Length: 198
Image (cartoon, rainbow, N blue to C red; front, side, top):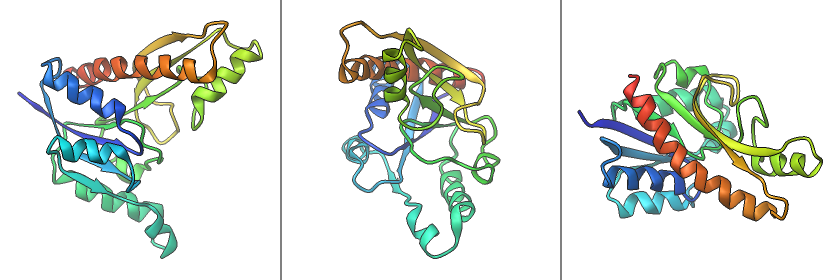
């Protein structure tokens, strides 16, 4: 039975594209029923529209400016997502933390891609922080993981992970490209595993 996916993005949507490609090649028996972005200029929204997939622009800023706050944002966003009846919600470069107000509406159905290994470099700028740690001799490699989302940032149960090497002559840009390529494979693998476990 085809599973319903909702993808959350904040940027170019390359990981979203990796999922679309996997669906096209029948690696995933799924359909993307909605793409959500907190940024109006996110190129991922253009990818979605080109593929005929509904989109939702959901900015947090108005909620902060008029005093409604993050909890109201999460509650309203969850309400909008519920109508799409997702089997799985995938945070693929989504740059907001979702609170329990949102997560409780979708128990064990929200997964996140993070460009670092479990227990390392939680939060933003993880690729750069990994590379800088390598330059200081503190780590020998980087990696990425997909995990179930819990209120604590990048700390939920891990579904899949992969080590990404850092070579002696790498620049940050070269390492970043290698890591993003690994992410594209990992997000498909982890989506398959998460759906199989439901």
